Each structure stands twice: as C-alpha cells, then as structure tokens.
Figure 1: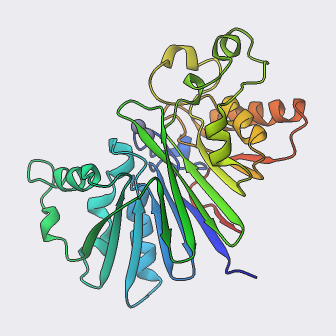
Figure 2: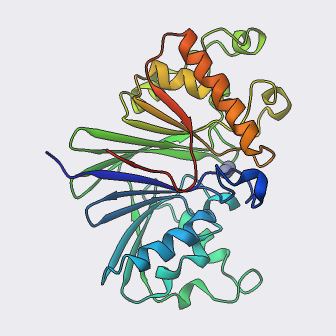
Length: 295
Ligand SMILES: [Zn+2]
Ligand SMILES: [Zn+2]
C-alpha cells in the first residue's frame, strides 16, 4: 500500500478575503490548498490562507521544511499570503516555485514585485529561505514518485490547473477557470439550465477519474449571466464536469465574496440535486477552510 496522501483547505474564498460571522463555516481566507505525502509538502496557491499554513508547518516542528509551490496564476487572491508565510523567512526552509513553461519567469517576478517597498516593508531578496525556480517540461514533471501535470485554463490573463498523481491516486486542483466558455453546447446551456453541459475532451481527459477534483464554482446559474468573461464558473457546470470525468469527490472552491455560508449551502445543494437528477454517484461538497481529507 502506498503512503497516505492528505489534502487540507487553508483558504477557499475567491477574489478577496471575507472575514466575519457570515462566512465562518466555509471561511474567509483566499485560495490555499496543502497536499502532503510523507515529508513532501505541495502548496497550491498562496492566498491569505497561506499565512495559517505557514504557522502550522512551524508548529509541526520539522527541522527542515521543503515545500513546492504551484500557483494557478498571479491574481492577488492567489499569492497575497506569500509575504506572510513565516517559513519563507527561515534559512532552514527550502522552497521551490514552479513555472509552467521553460524560460518563463512570471511567477518569480510577481513574487518579487509584490514585496517591493511601495507595497511591503521586507524585500523578497531579504527572505532567509532558499527559493528556487523550477519549470515544467511539456506540461509535466516528476517530483519523487509524484507525477505533476499542468493545463492552461480560460481566465483573464490565463491560469493553470494541476493534477497530482501518486500510487494510483489522483488530485486535481483547477481554480479560476471559466468552464462555461469551454462548453460545446454553450448557447443551449445558457438557454436551458437543465441541459447537460458538455465539456471539451481535453479537459475531461485531464480530470479523468480523479479521487478529488477541486474546482472553481464561484457562481450560481442565476448570477453567471451578469459575470460573463470574469473568469469563473457556475457551480452546476463543475458538477457536470465532475460527473462526465468520472470523479469520485468534488470540492466546489473559490466561493464568491458576496456569498454567506447560507448562500454557499444553497449553491452546493443545487449542484447536488442536479447530480441526483443525472444519476451521479460522486460526492460533491463546498470546500471549507480547515477541512482535511485523507486518500
Ligand atoms: Zn481567484
Ligand atoms: Zn483570477
């Protein structure tokens, strides 16, 4: 049997942090998901949830931290937590930051940029950790026995999904993607909300059979027509993607900052009812800060 793999949600909110009593259950921190296998620490996005993850990593008391960062893209809500990631200040930490294409330096440049003195008191170059850039080769890389792949998504300024495979287990992190722009029956899907939304084959192959799909499902069907082109998907479209790709569990992620816990509940309930009507067997739920899953 292979080593257990843990997934923990440190930030599930989209766009901007939303602290307060209305978002207590699903959480107000922006995107950050930890994937852990033995001593290997993979971090998907560094939104404000990254701050708490950093503190928790220190509390675990490992003498040396090695962490691998996979940023979906560099909108504020996905890397704003990085300057508050305390392990980045310690010389005993070794951090790897991945760029999706050879020769690309976008992630590095923006991590530097947000710590320039106009925005932040400490410069990136003053961080104590060893921080190294690494690149995907033809959208794939091997990290020990973990195979990581990336896929470009539809989002303003573009974004990337990542799939992590190890010992027959597969986790897909796919946030900030306007799935509804990719639909093969897009017009029909807007006119008839009950019509099954057909996702493109390349995306279905990427997500195929995932034990867990974490996907941007920011909007309800009613909200989406007012947000066309903003780069986010309807939660019901995520349900159709999960169903068509044979996913086992699906965490709807990147909750809208305008959504209270009750509204997120309603959005998830609608997606679950849709799956029931389609005869779906998968488990779909709202990603919630603090939730840890074991695979
Ligand atoms: Zn976002
Ligand atoms: Zn974005």
